[in-house]
Length: 437
Image 1 (tube, rainbow, N blue to C red):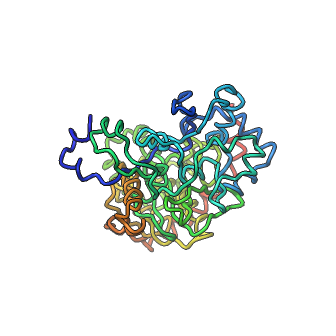
Image 2 (cartoon, rainbow, N blue to C red):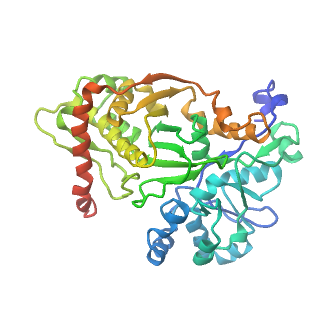
């Protein structure tokens, strides 16, 4: 449906178009602007053998030290090599390899010559120091640099809305279209993170803590990853917990809890520390800080005194302990005393209080709805591109915070013991995780 039919009162007021899309893509285009095959999306890991071969050849540190990200079969770099090795004729015909939002820019403007720093950095293509493609790395792995569009900030104009696209959308031709950014980077801005020192927690099915630093945090243990900021003025550092809200929904099914409210009511009756019961939220492996796909979920320390409410509270505390480990890594580089919070999990006052207590951090609710943070960030970048805002921090000044949650000092001793025992479990169980039938 055309925009003029959905919201006719706003059509004439559109001054710019912001663009975003999922990251880690690989869409080959020919010189005539035709797609050569279906896109490989972020979840596509067919390049596993490529990734393993690169790791064996260059070692585990080579790519991380250049790009700030762990070598992964999901990366655009590995997917491009997969194309070259498995579909060589198609690869030879490829003029540009685009990300999803770059393709949207092409459909809107007719130009496919731009990408941004967020997608280039996350795709294992960009040197974090130079903020350009790493020509030596491209040469070493055998990828053709000339198949990729030029890197810009997201806050620049990529082109203007074409007559054809304007007709399809019901807008006027000539509207500026920004370069755009990857969904993760745009969500940061939508949560109000736009300058060094700003950090936030997205508490959903998967949870992550992300924030902006002046410079990349090249961690020798590879516990965090990087996505460059939309405006190019800083680097977003991420740590992701694979199963946060997923752990809660799993426990609701397992213990037959009717609603999220009932879950919180029951969990609140158990004491801080859940009577010594510890939960590892590794239901689907874990990402930060262990990056182990074979890690498994665990309830540890069960005894006959534990009831349903202890297990439910342990799930909330275990996910909070995982987030605390991510935060502790980031605190090695940056002082962090407060987090903005978005996501479906932010509706739970109990879970937020537990996170504040376990992580020893103040949480601020944000006016942004979790499902609109990415769109809001893309719009902010477009606003900067046309001069509506002087910069991203000015744009983010319109995002309101409310409902501060402070850590409760009375439970710090109990949670210090919980975190200590939690931290001991993964190293003790790692060998068992990797010895499965």
